[in-house]
Image (cartoon, rainbow, N blue to C red; front, side):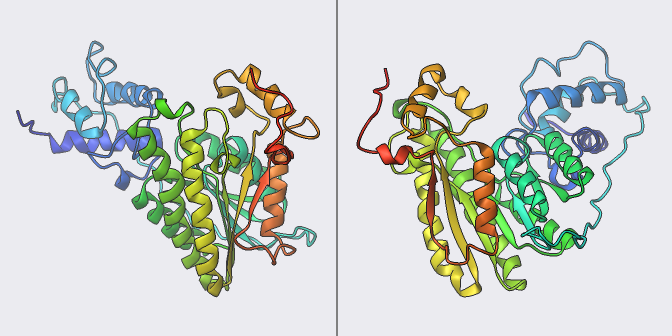
Length: 369
C-alpha cells in the first residue's frame, strides 16, 4: 500500500529534526538512514519525538515511542495518523548557516604548528579528543570532527577556544562519501584551506573471527578504508593549494599480528597501512607526506570494552618491557612531531606505539589464561 505524504507535514517534521539535532536541513532527506547516514540514535530520536508531539499538537497517546523508524519518511507517515492540519503548529526555528571562521595569527612563536590548519576526524572523545587538544596547544587551528557525538565535539571546541586556542566544529560521517565531500567544501569555504589531516575515525566490532558478520565488515571497511581514502583525496586537493601538507592515519599492531578480539579491526587496519604506503608514493610529487601511527593497547576506557578485559589488560602490560601501556597523550605528542618541522624525512612510515610489546613478538612473558 502506497502512502500519500502530506508535504506540509513533511516540511515541518524536517524543520523540527533540524532544530533538535542542529543539522543542516539540506542533509535531512526523507530517506536518509538515521543511524548510518545521520548518526541519530534512539536517545536523540526520543528528544525529537518529544518536540514533534509538542509543536504539532499530537495526542499524548501515540505510537512514536513504540515503533522502529529508520528514516524521516517513516516518521512522517506514522505522524500523519494523528496530525490535523487545522491545528496551528508551534513556530519552529531552523539552524543558522555556519559562519566563516578564518584562523587568526598566533602570538606565541614557540608553538611549532603556528599558522597551520589541521582536521582530526572522530575527535569528540577518546584518543581523537586528546590529539585535537594537543595539536591546538601546539598552535594549530584545529578542526574537530564528530558524527555520533556532536555535543562533545562542540564542547571541545569551546574548551580549546576558551583556553586561548583556535578550533572549529565540523559535523559529518567518515563512512558517508557524500558527507565527506560536503565537509571539505565547508573547510574550503569557511576556513580557507588545510595543511594536515589526522585520520582517527574508526569503526569495528570486537570478537572472534567466527563472530564477525557481513554488516560488521561493511561498517568497518566503509569508515576505516573508504572514508580514509576519500578524506585523503579531498584533503590533498586543499593541501596542494598551500604548497603541500601532511597526512597521518591511525592503525593497530593487530594489522600485522594477533591481538585478542581484534580480527575485524585488525584486518581493515591492514588495508589502511597498505593504503598509507601507496598514498605516500603518489602524493610525494605534491609535497604531501603520509605516515601511520599504530598504537597498541592504550590506557583509557576503550580497553575495558574488550571481553575479559580484567585478564587481558594485565596480560598486555606483561608484554611490555616496562609493564606499562601507552597513553593517549603519548600518541598525541608523536603525531604532533610527525606534523612538525623536524619530521621531514618521514614518509610512508608505519610506527608502532605499543609500549615496546613488539619486542616480544616471539617471546611471551606471561601466557594469557
